[in-house]
Image 1 (cartoon, one colour):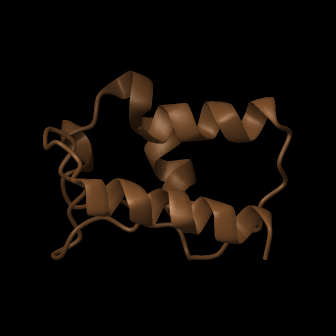
Image 2 (tube, rainbow, N blue to C red; image 1 turned 135 degrees about the vertical axis):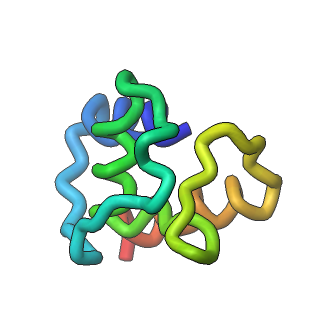
Image 3 (cartoon, one colour; image 1 turned 180 degrees about the vertical axis):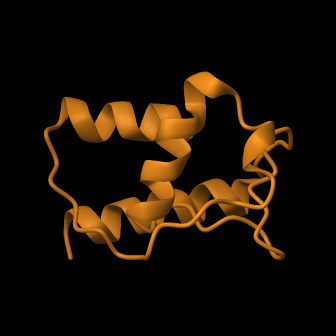
Length: 80
């Protein structure tokens, strides 16, 4: 999902402000190498915040609520 979001952001040439201090997720080593940059970018832009305990949980399936939250954050940053 993070890769799709960053591809969309780049495709639309959106210039989103950095909203959080970048830091890695505790389980970042479990993120596939092809998705890691996108996960970090979504984190830095404040679109993805992860789960409690600093987890990203890359092997889990996102719930409807989590997906809705991610898209709501993206929309808020595109059209404040």
